[in-house]
Structures are given as structure tokens and as C-alpha cells.
Length: 454
Image 1 (cartoon, one colour):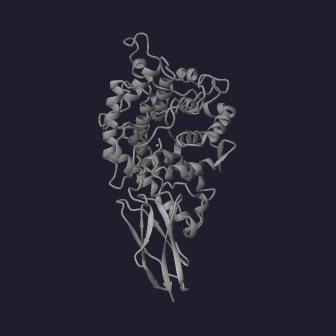
Image 2 (spheres, helix red, strand yellow):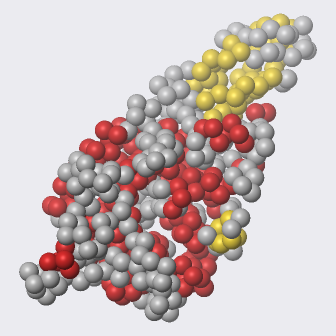
């Protein structure tokens, strides 16, 4: 509800980004509402156990880092960020590998990014130098590129070292660019240049690299393996911005990606994911919202954030449901809300809500605020008991949930996309007296009264 601005993918990977650690949370655009990101962050912080998110399959460090980077952009969450950092130190080898036989490039890049966000030193964390280890997983530029054309083709690309295989991809590459650039690594430029090769001429980034022995390591529109991926595109945009690289090549890449992603956005504000199971969801849309916001693309950012907010059920007070105890959580899709309204979140469904909310904390920072004063008005001055007079509610932010109530009756309402008054009828109780009608949001309350006569 509060019109105070604050400083946003793939669901299965639990990917997230946040502003760089060298600066405080950056303000979002004017006219945004801090409430949805704040309540989402509060819920997400409550899902931590000793600094770690424990899923039905055990501790999930990747998801935990997502949560930490999300919380770092919201005020008064420092204690949780510290707890996550401390937990990561004790579990570092489990996540990034032992540094000898096993070393995972994407995890190293993401861990180094979080460590910097947590205001710690990634060159000396948990007894290890994450930047040096990431450099070791980044292909060097050969001394004689002409003599070694294949090595030159994949120079700057990250590779896993693992008995299980190499699973590094474009998302990990974007984190590597950010981590290496902020560390002023000599390998940052090569990593950036290889990332930019993964952008097709359309402006989109693909998700997966070509095989290492393929001469052409660049994305090519229309070629198998170069399918456009909105999550990878948004993450590349975000990490390039947060890397602080202001080269012309990066500026041009961001402009092209911004245009492509905005064209993919639907009229509702939502963005569909890619792949065989592509669907509209809050993860992809939240990433897009944050990417647009960082680039000051105001319209698409606010539209995307509004759509995400509509998937954040806030059923409180008389309108409470089984989801009320998880107020702030964001659903992956609307059908998840419908399925959980009576059952609440279960062990089988909670993990998906955690992943969706970790991304939504960031995207929701660009949710539009109301441009009106929050209030409720009775259309009539008095009415008979049992009548259903109209009440008008003003100042509900677009997509915001609220509860209108009078003794004996209530209505759940949601702010209009276009703004304006919400008109609903409430049944009046018996009794010759003045009755109070209320409207409550997650953070505000307004009231009016009406004379009731039997």
C-alpha cells in the first residue's frame, strides 16, 4: 500500500540476482509500492532455518543464495543475510566443489556474487579464493589465437571440472562476468566477450553453449541450440548492468536485449518462459520486471510487476483463508493459488512457492502504487438492517489485495489495473446504531460509518 520506492530465473534452477554489494539498495522508480516486495521478503526470511532453506530433499544452497540476494535489496534484513553467509561458509565445498577434483563454475560465480552482496570478500571466504577458482574455470585467451583457433573461439567461456560432466551454461556465464568484473580480474573482459557471443542478432540470449569442439561458439538465430530464452536474457541483462561494465559493446547488447524482451511481454504484463514446457509464470516475469527496471524501462517493468502482484495472495482479517499464515508468498502461477486456498502450502508445494517468491521480491519492487488517497466511503448515509448498500474504496494499488468488512459481512477485493474506485455491497446487521465499515490491506486500514435502522 505504501507508496515508498525501493531498489528483481528459471524455476528449476532457482536463479536470482541482486544489486552489487558496493552500493546500498538502489531506489526503484517513482510511483512504486514497497509493500508487496516487503511482505514477500518477510515471508521468505521466515523460511530460513539457521541461515539455510531446507526443502523436502534437504538443504538447498542455491535457493538459499537466491533468498539472500533478494533480501539484500530490502531494508532491515541484514541479520538474515549474515546468517546465510555464515551457513554458506560451512557448506561451501558442498555447493562449489572441493576445488580439486570437483569445481563447479556456475556455482562459484553465483557464490562469489552473493558473498560480495553480503559485503564479504570473495577472495577470502571460507578459507578459499572464489575469484581465483572461478578464473581457473574460465578459458584463457591463447597466446597465439591464429595457431589455436578453437581455443580462441571459446576463450572466456566457463567450464565445470567434474566427474559428472560439464553443465556450465549462459546463466552461469553471466554471473561469472559480474563476479570477475567486480573483482577487477584480468579475465573479466574475455568472459564478457564470450557472454556477448551468446546473444543472437534478435537481441535474445540462448541458455546453453555450443559444444566445445564446435568452431562457431556464437548464438545464431534459427539454428538448433540457439533458441531464445527469456530467463537467460533477463539474467544476462541484470548481471551485465550490475557488473558495472559501461563499454559500448555492453550498452549495445543491453539495448538489443531490452527491445527483444519487451516485444515478448504480453499485454497482461506477463512473460512466457522458453522450452518444451514453456508457460507464463511469475519467475520469468519477475526477472523481466527487474531487468526492465534496472534499464529504466518504466512501462514494461511496472506492467510485469503488477502481473506478479496479482499472484501474491494476501487474504487477511475477515477474508482469511488457509494461505493467510503464508501472507507474502508468491505463487508460480494463479492455478497454484486456487489449489492452495483451502489446503494451504504443503511439503510438496512449499518449495515452488519459495522459488517463486525469491525472484518476486525483486520484480515486485516495481509494482505501481495508487495515485489516490486510501479511504472508504458509504454511498448512503443510512439504511435498513439487511440492506446491501454500496461502499466505495479508493487508493488500493493496482493488483493489491484488501478486505472490506462490516459486522456480519465481508468481501475480498483487488485493486484495479487502471486504478479508480472499487464498488462493492455489504449486508448490514440488525441494530439501531451506527455501524463501522472497514477496508484493510496488509499494511493499512481505513473506515467509515453508516446509520443502521431496524
